[in-house]
Length: 107
Image (cartoon, rainbow, N blue to C red; front, side, top):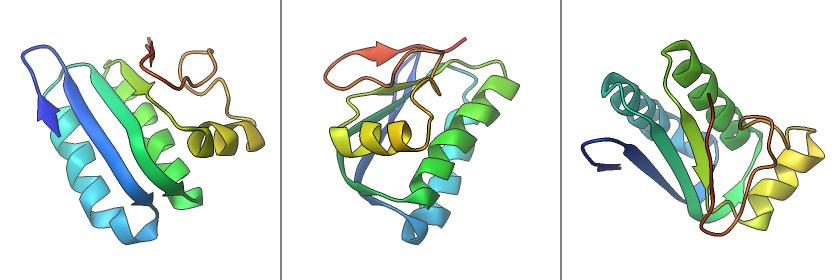
């Protein structure tokens, strides 16, 4: 996790699945307690399953409850394809989850 004065960036990498539940909970807690916008950078994700998607949804939901913007950046096709398959293309602010260097802000 990278922390700047105005943003918390959670770098997601490798396999995002059940095995990371404890680390994910810790990262979520740490990011939300900073009370700053959160960026989920998925550039290095190599696999994501339903548990990983649930983590993204939980991060977004809790961030919104706290009034924090949460965005998804650098989502590879394996992430955007799963979001599409589940009908969650518009999960992050009503815009399709993006790949590349773009950031999808949320309100």
